[in-house]
Length: 368
Image 1 (cartoon, rainbow, N blue to C red):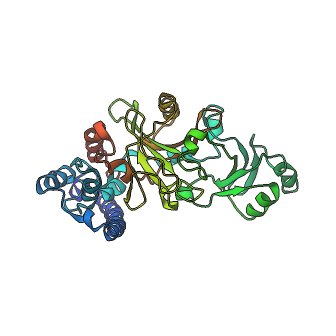
Image 2: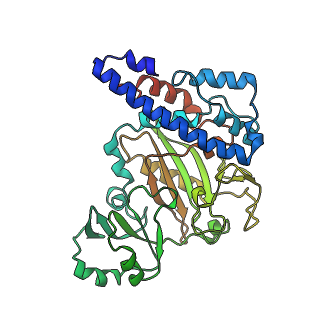
Image 3: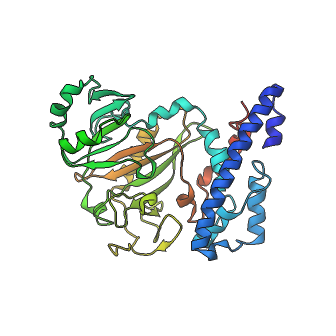
């Protein structure tokens, strides 16, 4: 990719700046994923085994337009877990350094990931009801009316509890999410905090609760807006669930199982480091059940995706509530995790992999 950057139609100063920025991002991604994969290999030495010489050669050739040398770690882990990984599996360091920033290249578009805007941009009833916002230090009620500090206690007493307090941006891995039981607890927790939202705590349907009752077990749906015709497609779906804790994300100890095209779980779940489970360690439930109202889940995801612009890959977190409706908890616009979508052996973008690759070569973020 460096050669392509230097051959572009830019001034010398722009060439040097772009090459430096790309090299910095690429080195950072390589270092991070070498460390990450090293932990996986330490826990599962069998994952280090070569896929096959033919498959690894095809893998290197397919991705060589971005980096002439890269580690085969992603492919080997996917091969070990799935038994037959596609050579088009995206190396995670290339996704981080090349693919994601080329597809989602407009920084301003990430406002769509701000939880304080969900119920203003999208139709009512899709997202959790919001009670209170703090945007850059300004307190706002559910209708965006300014809230004076002396009126906050009275307002907080009107909320329905338990409620959820979370950052309105960048709450990856359950970062800084609090479950609050009453107004006193809420007022204590929000002291000196900025940029947060207070939302209703959705009660999940017992169908989804069976996976792991203490946690809200969400479904991650990844959407891709085609670079060919701008149509939005679902490229993969995964069921997330807690594993002894209140949060379902893998960074907090949760498990994840890919969902097949027929709406059933993949037959096994994985933890953060690729450990396979045929049944849930806590509940003993087998990972073969079907998601409820699968068609409605997909339709809702596509409806929301159609109203998102300037982003070509987004992740939605959905839950099935106690009334039997799919709701969206969160929109993820950056920092995407592709490994669990690829561990079953298929590239993240599935049938669209070739068009994504070609687009990112021709419209690479570093080539202005």
